[in-house]
Length: 183
Image (spheres, rainbow, N blue to C red):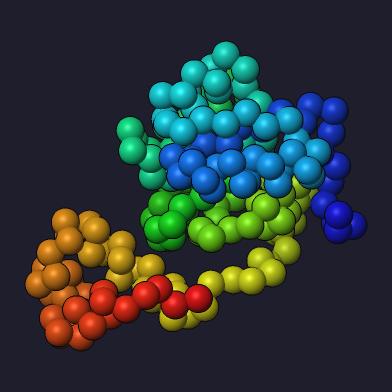
């Protein structure tokens, strides 16, 4: 553990909220190895239930879930346990949602793919300091690809509308969408 990080503390309870089951299992295992007592939830409803019944000291919440928005769980956590350290994760990084997450009480905001080290660094960073930068941040090509995918999804997978909103030629967009995601 880095010198500038604080200890987990006596209360090591953690809520992991994500609807991506394989990712949730891997992250839970990795966080348990780091000393956290992990409880997982795959939906907003399950996350709210855990936050209400057993508010944890730490939480990692995905922003977009099948049954709603992870920020709803952040609000419940802030209400039930104001000192809870919360990291919001998302595959759709945007400044507006980062600001919203921090305004309602998230400690930090990370874009997927974030690993367990990035997450624990964000959770354990002293309140007056920024966590260390991620070991392997997304490449500029990957950030561009993620943004295009997000706009494409928001336009209900309509290529023409997405191209118009991105001010891009439709055929160029089709070529980008046909390729695999960059690393």
